[in-house]
Length: 563
Picture 1 (cartoon, helix red, strand yellow):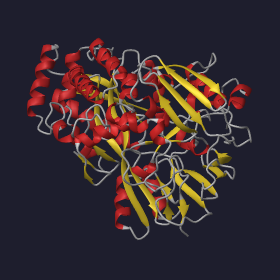
Picture 2 (picture 1 turned 90 degrees about the vertical axis):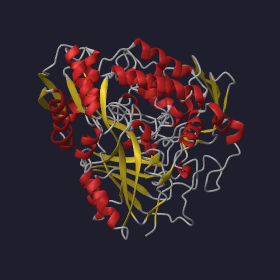
Picture 3 (picture 1 turned 180 degrees about the horizontal axis):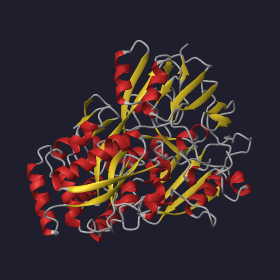
Picture 4 (picture 1 turned 60 degrees about the horizontal axis):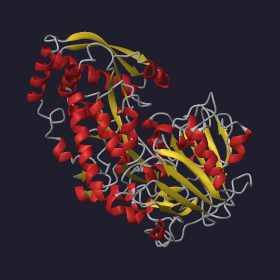
């Protein structure tokens, strides 16, 4: 299997091993035990949890300017605010190790941890001497309060992360520097979930109990102090965030830069352009065309790419006729050429073929095998023949329509993805479409209310490398992001087994079983998986942007500027 961001061959066994290490299951579980990690070192030779840049002799000073989609509806991560804006101010209990491409887990606010033999109890031993930005000492009470907010928020508040920690029963402070997590049943990816993944949509930060209680656990209008390497200074709506160095950070070596500015640049093409022209120092995701230009300008910029764990999708409303007939959904699944859509989208983002999870996931089917499967293969003759047979059996030998195809107004959706998908189902099955454009910020209401036949967007996001949390949210009956209203008891049965199984080999078999079921019932169509295109000026060091198993937005604590 070819993993593009590594630039080398990665075997299936290696990927499985990576997954086991991250999930704390199978052979890798011992690597995540406290007695191992307390004495572990990073790839740069420093004590675990104290990450350092790969380059020698880092310089201090300067302000890093990052270009990206840095807008926010409010400030509460656990009520839906994008973490990529605020992760710089906070820490989690654990984090992924940038030094090895995010393949292992390191301590952060927890110095070490222990996992009970039955996999149901996680005990974390916290760092002493850590303080929030307002001077309040950090303790186990803050961890307990944060998870109270996630598990049982006050009336009138939502908890967007509750589904991700569904296996968690309770969190209790044992003493000032010890906190215990009790699970309802073993859950293999639980420790990886606590890393937060720190992608643009998900992070597991710790808020101060004091601020939570003062605001009835509602932080939408409050920038709560954190324990992180940067302190909040200003937010200029529609323009940028401004952060300053935390001089009292618990790792006294970090950060090296004096400040951080997150500059709002909504369009991917513009993000790369401002880096090329020196108006910004770096971006986590440029458009492919500008990224390619960066490849030619290695005298001034560096480039890399990493899987985003996100997918472009055509969500099919399973409750609307005729899509409530699994034969029709299966026909659409078979007939659409993923390769054609990937080709149409090739100048927007790096993208790849995938089967219900990104190729970066440790349980993914190897690409060479996917390319041979019905629905995914490039030669569509047999797939289209089978699709037409299914349409005839369902009573639609001549197709049907027009169906309402909802799309975001953003150019990548309205001008590329929606027309490409509409053309595929028209050309192969004579399903005609009427496209309705909606501002992307308003699509949440369309999903929630089910006011669509097909909705073309990017709504299938893995929060961590292990796909289990995303599958529970998007594919389980009644899942919080089950926008297609899909419900298959057989799939649910396998999902429950996946959630509780701790053996890596058995989990792999269950994932394969579930994907076979999903290919047949086809709740929606995944058209492609994306990869993010990183760009940075050559004087930006310590970014750890290369060799990542998946993307990680934020985390600029090891960055330094060589100028």
